[in-house]
Length: 105
Image (cartoon, rainbow, N blue to C red; front, side):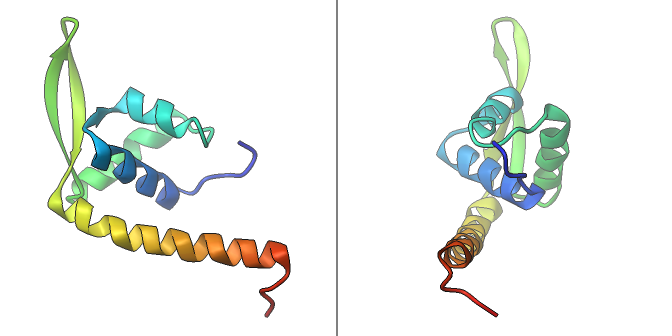
């Protein structure tokens, strides 16, 4: 994707993905890569930040003989999602209005 993606948008994407089902880092990164060119070195600090903020928790689960770290959304994370959704809608609408020429200073 040509347009850069902010860390806040990545946080929103991560919480949206994990809200649907628990997931592990590589799976999350592959989903986000469908719309943004991010590296794991970008994703993991964001996952850590979301965990530290109390929006995510982790647990380990064995998969094909190896332990995988899964992320799950917390109640706080679920409560934060509507705010991020509202901010995204406002941002998206504003950009569309600028492109269409209906938003001017």
